[in-house]
Length: 129
Image (cartoon, rainbow, N blue to C red; front, side):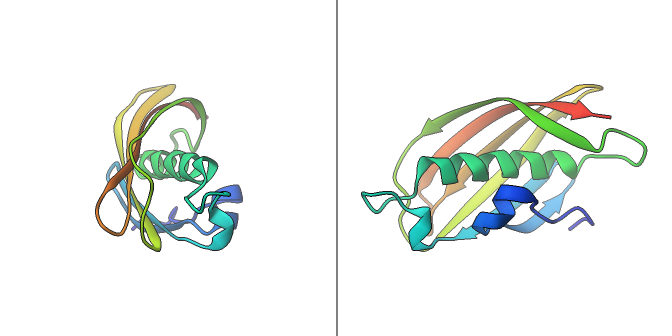
């Protein structure tokens, strides 16, 4: 795990944790609470989107070299919702596919406690120098 293993802002506020972070890969988790669920009792899509964005961002952060870009903003995040989450914990896995001088491409997926794929994402991120 690197020194940049914290989740900042809204992701930290809702309880997302960094479990592993190294060499373009990230693993995050979220212990689900009642406020993460919608009227139907399933995890709100906004929670899932936030977690996907944070998972991609964490994977990207793990590739940064000293003196290089230290920040990024999301330009595009394409998602596919596959199944409702079951259980009490979400597990997210991210990969930085490529990071160039100004743009990075990352993917992420979230699984539930049963290992069921819940949602996937592909993202484009603008690097901030």
